[in-house]
Amino acid sequence: MAQTAFLYLTIFSAFTLTSLFPSTLSRSLSEETTTLLDVSASLTQAHDVLSFNPETLKPLDRQETQAQAHTLTPLNSSFSLQLLPRDALHNSQHKDYESLVLSRLGRDSARVNSLHTKLQLAIQNIKKSDLEPMHTEIRPEDLSTPVVSGVSQGSGEYFTRIGVGTPAKSLYMVLDTGSDINWLQCEPCSDCYQQTDPVFKPTGSSTYHPVTCDSAQCQSLHVSACRADKCLYQVSYGDGSYTVGDFVTETVSFGNSGAIHNVGLGCGHDNEGLFVGAAGLLGLGGGALSLPSQFKATSFSYCLVNRDSSTSSTLEFNSAAPSDSVTAPLLKDSRVETFYYVGLKGFSVGGQPVSVPPSVFEVDESGNGGIIVDSGTAITRLQTEAYNSLRDAFKRLTRDLPSASGFALFDTCYDLSSRSRVQVPTVSFLFAGGKSLSLPAKNYLIPVDSAGTFCFAFAPTSSSPSIIGNVQQQGTRVSYDLANNRVGFSPNKC
Image (tube, rainbow, N blue to C red; front, side):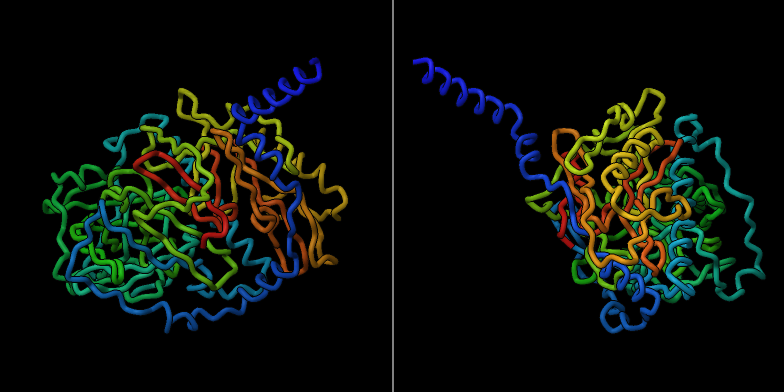
């Protein structure tokens, strides 16, 4: 009788635990504690990116976008665009892979500074009425100057191709979830940087219309001015880079999927230090002037291929997220509508939770804290306390790997020159709701030279917000469910 009672108790206890903590149990049973890093494959890809010729993409990727006779119905139509890494379009002529990485990290630091500046302006309650455009005077003689080459200070790392105007002109545009304003370089140029496609000519489009100063779109700009009742815009990116010009509406077309009319965008005549290779930027943030907001998208998603790869993936709108997505709450802060905050609780390394106070990833009353998902930042930035805990947990489990000196912003590096493959502890994000996302080893141990030095691709910051960068997102379809405030991560869906 006692044995029977004990058996019932055991079965009941097991059932109760499974019912109360199903995700926790399933994760602990299935989570792999180590993952394989293919050292040879990573180094081969690093070598190939230096010799890749962007001209080989032209027959496939430079097909002209045709303006469609029909207009997309934004709430019901789903469509996708090709997405390519920066180095597949712009051959940077670096002498070696180390200099390429240093160039990327330089752009990345500028990018992170611009995001931190944007948040601090909001926290300090600096309103758009307190901001004034830079005194940039476009002189008549400047309007006839040729397009000049600029310096790449921005961090446009992934490009997509759209059509602008009627008839449509095909242009490569940077994808950016950390910005709201859509803009492109326009003739006549006072100062334009080098881009892959011809600079857009407003006079060649029948659907180009300046926006008046009293329009809702002009009033939504953070920095604007007025000239002859035409709205002027300026966007600055925190690193001294900026774009200035006319704010207009135009038709934007998406290949065979159709076109959307009257999209508000900046037509920049003075553009300094931004996004060499691209014609401009598509703002995918949460603000009123972003592309998803303007055509009332219910969702969008992207999958970012490895930046050393010449392959492409897609940017999709209004498509259902993959059924196997690891989902987490998508949070917003009314002070900075642009940013997509995510409900992150912590990390695990080698299957063991890392000790990090959950408050580190929460937005406090002043607006500091929290963590955002960003397509333009490369390296994930974590508050120093969280970073130290994550790094120390990883180092404890990699004592058998030969160490190397730090590199740029990385303080934890390894000499893997004698290895072709190596097992390393699995790093996972732990989201609110109990879901976890295990990262491939190549998403957190990355080569920084061609000799076999690999570094732990996270970095500390003392500023807010923390940022999940695109190196950690590579190979994963990231879905933003705007209707239900959820963000999903689905590995191997490029």
